[in-house]
Length: 111
Length: 116
Image (cartoon, rainbow over all chains, first blue to last red; front, side):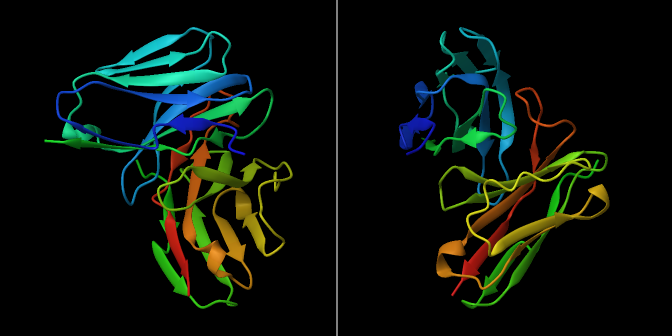
């Protein structure tokens, strides 16, 4: 059983469209991170959220941490081909000393 | 500055052989992590090292897997008697502090292991 469930698993959209990716769990996370990974490279950290209800914006990307700190979402406005990649959420449960990663959402933005 | 480097970038081996994967973390980073990633999937935690503390080996899938970190810097992940299910990308990451929710892990490009 995956501790962090991401949906959708695959997403293919046209340039200019908006999209939302979800990261859900039954566990409470002390913090949650979003990464983007491109082929042949390691994941790169996009954002860290720590407070329930927190919203962070990074240019066209908006990240939200659920009030109960069990879920998170990533919204991309006016997607561009450069947004293509594997988006991963990862969280820390309680005082654990490791990140638990979700299964990822493979996003393809077509020109 | 230099990021996390891993070698080799690709490794093809035969079932039953031993392999060693190397990770050079960012200089000064005290924490080092190994993960395994199957094609297009999320990362599976394997092991981490923090300073001089005993490593957390809780993610190692079997006793065929082991890792060491020499001098608090370079780390080697060893897989003995490789099996086909060991085929994956092995990623290394390092950070300045132990990830307790606020640390940033910097990842290497990974080693793609294929066991024939």
